[in-house]
Amino acid sequence: MSPNKAQELAWLRTISGELATLTVTRLEDTLPWYGSMPPSRRSAVGLVAQTGISSFIQWYENPGSTPWIASDVFSSAPRELLRSISLQETLQLIRVVVTVVEERVAPRSDSLREAIMHYSRDVAFAAADVYARQAEARGLWDARLEALVVDSILTGESDDELPSRIAALGWHGDGEAAVLVGSAERSVDVDQMRRTARHAGADVLIGLQGTRLVLVLGRMAPPQPQEPGAAPEEPQRTFLEIAGRLADGFADGPLVLGPTVDNLIEASRSARAALAGVAVARAWRHAPRPVPADDLLPERALAGDGLARRTLIEQIYEPLLAHSAELMETLWCYLDNGRSLEATARELFVHPNTVRYRLKKVSEVIGWNATGARESLILQSALIAGSIAQQGGRRQPKRGS
Image (cartoon, rainbow, N blue to C red; front, top):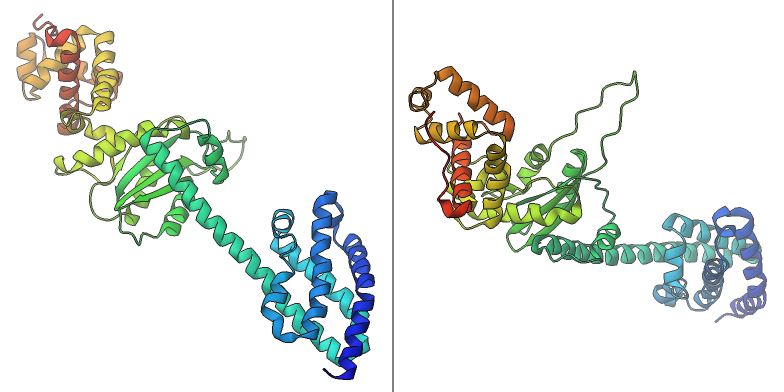
């Protein structure tokens, strides 16, 4: 070590306390966010600044120690630092420290001025590395937490901690939710699917379990009342429309959307229906993609899905039974006669237009159209399931007029 450098090192150690004091003063004067922090956090940030000055002196003595000396600046209080300030604020902190040291130290010699420039660059890279590693660790933690939340929804084994876990993921969904289930390769572009969902006005939780890909969809925000005179907003997309935009991210095979539920906590019901639908979707040769799970109610019921049977009974059989025995009778006859208006009219001794009117009323009551081939299958399955459930199938609607 040259005599000049030894003298400079001795001088730097002498003024290190002065530099630390000047740095803290400058932080308070130039960075508003520093002065507004709680004392404990402010102390942690000040400690990092002081460590940076001490590390510079060590580095100047032995420049070969760059890799660990620069990183050591942030090891004094890494958790407090990352919790207290952002990467942008950290760079502002580095700038203040470098400015103070440069103003006080650089005029002494050109070698010190050059050393400050090199060291400030190393510290800036060290700061970026600390935040990058923290972001990577957070990303891995978020992925594990997201997988845990999706698994809880699929199994229905939710507990009191599920809402807090969902909140920790930064879930922006509000109100209704639905579950989309299909298959995918392990190389699925998760980030692209998130972007697609966001552009469609939905938030999404993604779970990849082997080759099964599960998306839990939620609306980004509830529709807001429109002010008078405001330009009309784009209509809110249905979950089926959102699922259609996401379909390209899935591999070939069945893609089933569970029914809409009121909130994310109840999404397990949508998930059960979607999973049951995937298991039987191939039984419908021309099933659309995606297909609503409720459009697969007959196949699901035949496969032993209790939820499908209850849905058929509660959404179709019981509303018809409660509304009108006449409509129930007409529907039975129409389906038993191969959806023939004339044959149904002859059996009931009414005009075919009367049958048409009654079938229209059936559609208004339950929302299903008996004249369509697929929907008539669903309605007939509902009548059969309801009849079996009602007194062991012995009670049938009375035929004839």
